[in-house]
Length: 322
Ligand SMILES: NC(=O)c1ccc[n+]([C@@H]2O[C@H](COP(=O)([O-])OP(=O)(O)OC[C@H]3O[C@@H](n4cnc5c(N)ncnc54)[C@H](OP(=O)(O)O)[C@@H]3O)[C@@H](O)[C@H]2O)c1
Image (cartoon, rainbow, N blue to C red; front, side):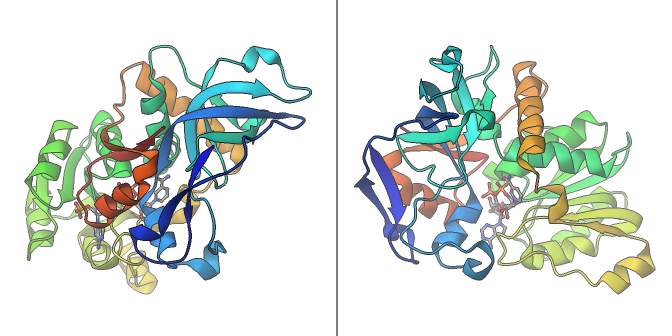
């Protein structure tokens, strides 16, 4: 089978196609014929060597934490009724490949009415978005700021906050991304690459700041976003595309009565991750959330997918297709 591996830390060119033997399902496992691979912006950062001491990956390795496809075969002790079913599954790593071998417990069935690609697009951002939106306990009429709003996670958070009755203010870079955020329910959009953007968000919020921030951008954007939270508001920091999490002065947060929550909102035990993924798929099948697949690339061109994410040229989710 074909795989794509990171051959050394570096630019997108270190992603190289190679071959591995066809995998066989062991006891309790299944082989999934992968049709879509979820590509995370985090994977582009890890490929450069960023965060290596924390995440512990060193080349050569096959990236990819989640895939969707059809069960091709099952190992000993697994119900053969799984064969032929469309599923999504976390893989740990090794997802940039034509096949994935996972324990049967890891499978999340794709419900009727939803495509495997759409389901794969929701595999990782769906649980994160549902968890963040749930923790924010958004009340109708509250002002909610979503940074990096046209990214994978941002596109879902805009929809969930809008559905909760919030006045959603979305920030992103450039007209195409801002247009998408509007389409998904943002009542106001602001370009966070332009000077003075925090002031424009404040104006869009009626001058008093926002009640909730979902910061998917991190870095300087996240730090500036923290300055716009009204007293008693909630600030969620989980994004690192800006190079780091938003650096928050917790003493200042305390003085302003701003609750700061972080990665605990988007890290799950496997069982909870599957429960939330199933919920996200059900919401999408019922038409209550719309996964936005902005761009797809053939597996062999994973390097181009990474380059597009790094150039900030992508909207919504990026998938590799097999
Ligand atoms: N399950 C998940 O997917 C999950 C879970 C936990 C945490 N996260 C984290 O949440 C963040 C957002 O995830 P995502 O899936 O929405 O990512 P994404 O689709 O790649 O979107 C990230 C966006 O960040 C913005 N950005 C701001 N500053 C940037 C910079 N200096 N370089 C590159 N991009 C920059 C870009 O939008 P503009 O061009 O509009 O600025 C980009 O589109 C990531 O840090 C991710 O690791 C994701």
